[in-house]
Length: 303
Length: 303
Image (tube, rainbow over all chains, first blue to last red; front, side):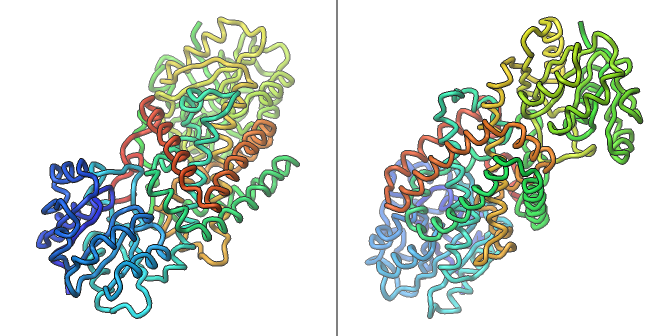
């Protein structure tokens, strides 16, 4: 079972990238797409993100075998309710949301009797909107599928094959574990980055233009993820609240320990900690999840 | 007054890059270099980081017009005491340390009667050692010069011209202000990155291999700077303790506010904060201090 007709609801970075990736890697498949923003629909049509941009969600999903909801996680329930009456039988409904327990619950409630198989491609950039997508976004990235209990194995396999065709590596886990893992690898880093960029822009002794000028000392690395889509991230923090607050608690304890080491001048503790974190970076590069060139391959003259 | 004979003490990322940049952009100048580690001296000679690698610091500085100390800030005093008896008259002594008040004090004590003009090129990568340097490291980066009271304006101008020749843009400010600015643009980001990478590698519910696998969700952006040289960074935090602790206090307050917004479900506060931080990123890119391509120009297939 392969998907030959794929409907994409939401044509931003993720939705647009899926459309472009299907065009490139599954050229036999037809994609339909919808975005609540008319300007985004126009731009999606201009860029050819999907085979056909539709003017309403009903028309988008009418003949689909796979529907992928690519809207902020707080909007998943509403988007699902909107398409519910128009879904053909046998369709698989999935999504790309960054938190999975709350999304699984919202979709199950909105789509009783339908095959809902949530998923999360762990890929993205700080850009958003219909101009942000590109076909290779999922290459070598992980896509985590979180099938609810009792999900049809054949449909799970079909969704896995779909993501593998777009270049992703697939992992299956339960939604609660996903939310814990992503709280530490993605949600906490974003929260910290948003915080420090806010702190730096709001000091009396140092001007914002100084912060910007000297950002190459480390600060700029945080600004990229602190430029991510505000609506998407508001929803992520609210929907994965417990895991995020738990990770934040751990982080704060560790930060307090390093703060104390600085205050009392314990150079040995600092040195040991900094040596340990260096090894993690090495592993990430070995596994192909980042680029080993200095500055991630920023050109020498620009970055 | 230009410097035709430049001595570099410490042949790691910064020292090596200065040597290579002089070779490329000031081809008339002669460089001598020394590193306390014999293996680094050997490698420096193989890579041609300086015109001549010397086996002791005395010989390195004997005929120099400019000496640049490129050792961790905690080692500046000792390095200065070692060269003090061998310095020719009229020489300018500078450095590249990331904190300036403590270095200025250490150098002034070790080198009474000499022209000490501290400096800090705000440039670097997470790599260290004699293999890490490259000639274009300083292109379009800022170099902050912090002349002590009563410094000879002609010598300050000569040092500025030197850094501009290597491609840097020069700013002059006092050491205390430098330390405050860098605490927020560089030292705090490094401390936060070191902390979160440590937190993530030390959880019961999530394995280290999961953290590495799903690092593309944001975490990997922190690992680059958390892979920086442990000795250098231990020294930076100990030498700029007050400013770092002050900034850390601000950061913690701001983080607590966002934590509370998540706990009480205040989406509006989160959205407003995340919208504000997005604008800072835009300014950094406009000023050429980072690369606007998605993922800083990481190749699509690797990063």
